[in-house]
Image: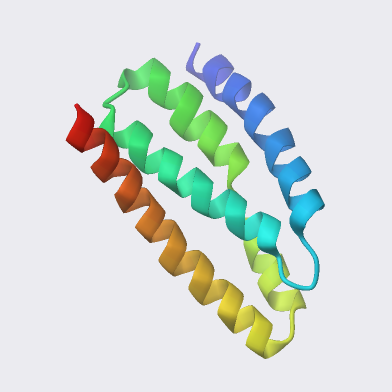
Length: 111
């Protein structure tokens, strides 16, 4: 059952990532940056919710795992000129970790 929940989450997350990245990426990978930051924020929020195994499989592993992408991030960083790549890597790392902390903090403050 866990594998089915992961797959269901991924069925939504992966196409959503593709559509957003495709629509917004250009000289700077704005779409992929947005996807990774939003996905990290959601991941932090879901973690703070203590969803249980089924909820975590669906939303954390399935949706967030398929929505965010380290492989696309890495490829896009390597394909850019050095200055752009550096800005992209730093922005992704700082904003994604920050978004995860904010997601956790917001849910923790409410619940």
